[in-house]
Amino acid sequence: MTRSNNPLTRRFSVNPPALTIVGPRINSSRKIIAQAIQEKNEALIQHEARIQHEAGAAYIDVNAGAFLEQEVEYLPWLVRTVQAAVDAPLWLDSADAEAVEAALEVHRGKAVINSITFEKQRMDAMVPLAVKHSCGIVGLTIDSIRVPTEAEKKCEIAAHMVEALTAAGIKKEDIFVDPVVMPVGVAPEAGKETLAAIPLIRAAIPGIHIVCGAGNVSFQLPNRALLEATYLAMAMAAGMDVAFLDPCNTSIMASIIAAEALLGKDEFCIRYISAYREGKLGKK
Image 1 (tube, one colour):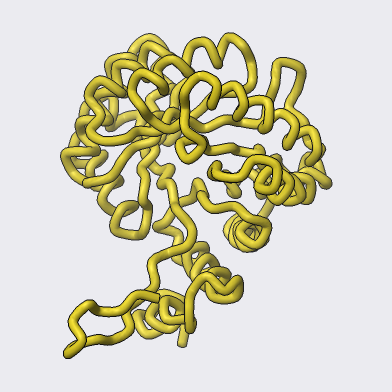
Image 2 (cartoon, rainbow, N blue to C red):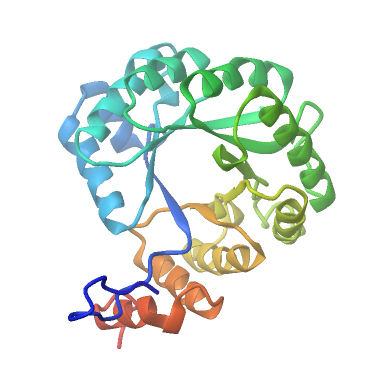
């Protein structure tokens, strides 16, 4: 909990969020975003950036991957457009090294490359860019053989990947390990295994960040927000510190605030109480 520095007006203030949020809404897989990118509709893109930032996203993810050959043009345009509207670092969501490099050239501040797998081709293409531009990088626990579901295998891949990244000159605090959340409707044990992987990775590789895209867990199931919110709370308890989620979803954000209070990450529940008084936790 923070306090005012002025002893005459000292009072408790709202605790900062314990969970770092990456806003995913500017993604070319969404029809409205793809159209805005093609038309270079700055107003719509900037609106999407602002509402996510104002709702609590510390990072904004930008994706132009639907356009293939034009991605090298569109991704840096997204970077300039978003950063003209919000003072936030961006996650550059692309598998195209040329597009990522073009985006890094115009990005202000410390960007994050989203993402790589533990495959030689992907590592060789992206790691030198992360080193050159001193940016962060997301590493998925996927190797050249398969996408593992077992917690121990996820941890093993993460350890090898982080070792390679740090050897290349990337600081641990700039590495975001993603243990890859899989849909439980397809693989019933997958959600549990990813939750088990988080503390294993945390213990084996101190100093890195662990990020999850919890929305994947509910793919093709009804009431996805309920499953996502529940899984987020479980992942937070396991040790996840960064989440890829829509901060404009008020029910999910309410669950995060509640989870922080229950996990002892909101001293005296000041943030929870403040959110309640502001009507952010649903009906009073």
